[in-house]
Length: 466
Image: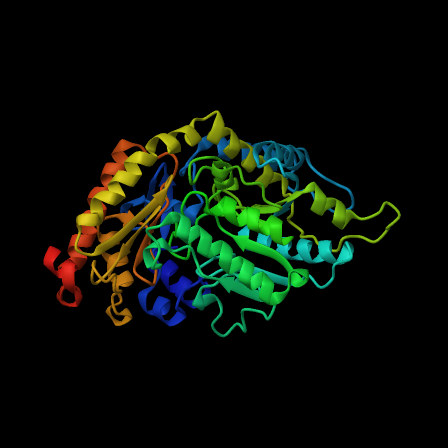
């Protein structure tokens, strides 16, 4: 099909995720044609530096031939194998064993899903089943964080605490609750790490007390909040929340869909604080986006509680047609090999200081109020006034202006609706790619600053800096 025909067909037939449908109809799509390393190419021949790894997922970069070969071998040998009826396949078994060996020691069992949203949905179902099966049926309340993202399934989107995922969807559900985010830049005690940690622990304790510990099942959190604006809590926060859950007798669920597989440095963000969750959800970097796959990792205690007594003949009624898909599993195994033996995990760790320095260097820009990062996950928060941290008015549509300017500069990242710019470069980024990223990013910010309406919106220190 021609470029024009594709754009027209997209406008007529393809529903895109998390978008204003009318705005997309008016704009039309950008058709991507190919990718290699850290770069994408669109149908107009423009080469784009992808500083967001697709959607936080293409951690190994595009065009890894060994992954294509692993998928081809498996598709030739056994393209599908159900995990129902006691069947399995070699790559699915090997991947489960590998994940258990690499994940926190508390996690001993793996259930494969198609992605992150259904991993969260599966975790909720497993938790509900666990407490019912172990004689604690009142434990139904679930707690997450404001600005958290836990997918867009009918249940998970309620644990998500972003307005777009609730509007007109009758969410959150009555049993879903949210605590303040550990958002240092927007908290009055944000400069005091211990005070911020203590406030989060106190909020969890107060919420559990209000609901009754006998009624609370679990606390869900991302080690770093991704879609909520790359909110990076202070070191020690994750462990403190895990320890609080243990004291309160509620399950701790680590959502590592974004942070897993080297995104923050170690293979899993939990490793940095020796945190052992009761359940952990993963996806994205598991297959580096080369095929759909997610997983729920669970402790043996939860598994045994769900499995029940050997005399119990009832099945556990949860499953999906494509769970433990052999091709996705074969891809996952090769992706894990690239992280470890291929040196990508080590490269991500080595390049993290360069990434951090590049973001921090932009704090001198009149539009930039905050820089935050861990590993190769980071953000810049744009503000109208550096002193008061006042946000730009939504009517300015700053994210749209930023995204358009970035594309003109052949750069891809995520411009969130609240004027936060998110970055998640692939672990294959090197010095040249980072130099391009920060050169193009500064030009993008300069171009937007030149808009008369944007410059007029600046106040205080931001206006002085301009």
